[in-house]
Structures are given as structure tokens and as C-alpha cells.
Amino acid sequence: QVQLVESGGGSVQAGGSLRLSCSAFGGGDSVPCMAWFRQAPGKEREGVAYIDSDGSTTYADSVKGRFTISRDNAKNVYLQMNSLKPEDTAMYYCAADRYTWLCSVGREVMDYWGKGTLVTISS
Image: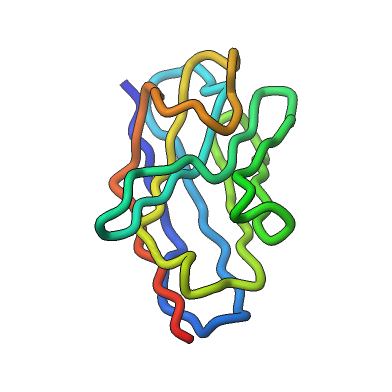
């Protein structure tokens, strides 16, 4: 079993930046597929950024060009968020999967989930 812990959320004004971090704990295996999801009140959860074991990334259209997902080892992942907009306000969740297959936008089933970190963007 793998535990995911997010950090870096907060409240910023529109146009600002935040950097979210996620670390995986437990087990000895890597998690080839890692991703960031978000869920706003009254909205369905959506995957916004994915990165596989080869470093290949995909992004939801709503964040493309503004957000960057990266990883520095097998169990740490980051989300750099720039030019933030009020519509980015949501609970952001780190997720990971044991397989890199179909590690791209549109995939909703993941093996492990963090508890979330809140991002609030004011206009």
C-alpha cells in the first residue's frame, strides 16, 4: 500500500503562482504513473496533468500552457501552476498508479490517492 501526501496549496490572487508537491510513502515499488486531479464544488473530479515513467506528460486543455507537471524520482511529483485564474479554485489531489499504460488525460482510475490540498484563487 502506498500513501500519497500533498502540500503547497493556499490562497493567491489571480495571475499568481503556486507549486504543489506530492510524495509517495510505503512499499518499495515505484509508481510509474502519477497525476494531479482537481474537484471544484458541484463539479466532477477531473485529471489535469499526468506524467509517466518516461517523463511524457499530458494536460487538460483548461490548464495547458499554464501548468507543468514534473517528477524528480519515482515517488515525488510536482505541479507548477502559473497565471492562475479563479476557475482554478478546487481541491487538488495527487494520484498514482502502478502501471504507466494509458497514463494520460482521460484516465480516471488510479491505484492510490492523496487526501487533497485546497487551492483558492481570488479575482
